Amino acid sequence: MISDAESSEFDWDGGNAGKNRKHRVEDTESEEAFFDGRKVLMKDALHSHGEERFILLGKTKGDRLLFIVFTKRKMKIRVISARQANKKEIPLYEKAA
Image 1 (tube, helix red, strand yellow):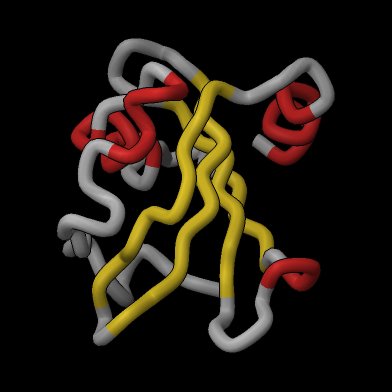
Image 2 (cartoon, rainbow, N blue to C red):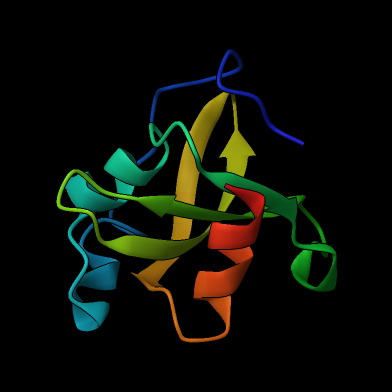
């Protein structure tokens, strides 16, 4: 698992910057979810081939619940995918938070 103390820096480059606009999520908005005090973190065992991946459910400053897949590279958080949480994911956040 990943803790808040490990990193608060993000890795954005040509491979992932702006990539989630197709889901109507800006890079800065996805970063906000990592600072949600009630966020839910899970290991993404299904997609952790070659590198360890994690899933985060967290709310933004605008109270939007996001589902984010990310990895850690050189102590930085690298967002792979970010989108609004769906109906099945909302109860996971509410139950854990």
